Length: 156
Image (cartoon, rainbow, N blue to C red; front, side, top):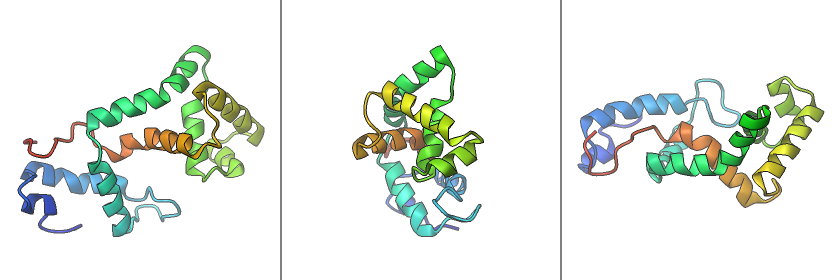
């Protein structure tokens, strides 16, 4: 168990229904840390993920992700390709071309070509740390922020 009673419940901000959802969400996050063994997540990682999750409203997170990824998704719809999946694999691999290509099952030159296209379509260079942060958040918010999470003070 992550902690009992849940801090938010003690503060009176959360209903018991939403408290029952939190362990499921924590379980969904488990094993997603860089270098973590499958199914293992250190409690400190869950705490920071929870803090980040709580900073976003689901609707706002969805709008942010949609806006950042819109050019890539539109390009995929018109021309095919897997720009979003390629970008996710590249960022998850710590920007390691060889590892990302291996995970995607493509040649590293194919990955380079896709990344060049994604960079051009996104309109900003991937060397810009702020752009990479926006892309990473847009790709990750769906995993972090459960859909329909109630705002503080709302009943779940």
